[in-house]
Length: 385
Picture (cartoon, rainbow, N blue to C red):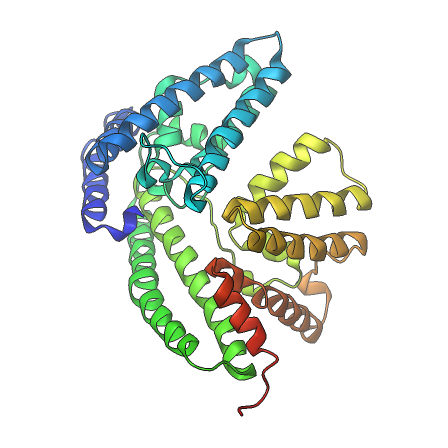
């Protein structure tokens, strides 16, 4: 991750300074950001630079073809998405699992691909539904794919929003500058201080014998670690993105105050949930879906989100578990709770139930079968001896 390298942090700070010094140049962020992104990748890894140069050019050609063609549009649309999902997404997962090996590739090639594939797919959707009106210059498309602040860990940028920002001149006033710098510092504190300390505590407790209290503690503690880790990266990406002149979407919107699982997934890693909801619902149902279809799509979306995190049975069942809860909420029409229309007791009770359901499953993010099973077994190990 770029944000764990001090040289990368210094480089991004330097880029912000350059943009501020050239703010009177109308196209400064369009041209300078692409130069910065390319140089950044080249210095980080020559292999990564070559891969992303080729990957971006190929997908831009597919994007332009989809914008301009009137023949076989749906076929081209499906092929472009399938090529990215099968050729890139599954390739990443199989490489990580040790199934796929090729001397031409190594781990650095796959840096950021899991996020960037989703961005490329969003661009294909835009081209498909807007046609020639959705066409953009290669410069802006490359900036979108290679945007360094969100390159490795999101938030997932929407193509339409990024292009709208691209047309605006670079403007960062004193208030935005102050808020963004504070956001970056908060993210660094979460990731470097909190997560490091909390992980050492988690590992220490995990080494001992696990009983009910220890397992409950580890489940809650790991949930907090994941939150500070994910939200810390998002804070840094949002802060630097805004300092570079682009509006960054919020990724965590007070998820602990979510009174239903449906609302939780609108508040936790929100851009990921939004991506799957927008693109899956758009593909399968252009109109408001029935309860049955909404329930089925909820299961499908959550299974896909689970497999997006990792191509393993652990993540499959994680997605299925959340999908079934969302399906139940859709079926019984309990997906939302309006805080102003219910009592505080009921609202916070629903929040507690939602957090309990999340807490019991979030340990899956450890991606370690032995750790997951030990903690779950410990829940039923009530007394010592």
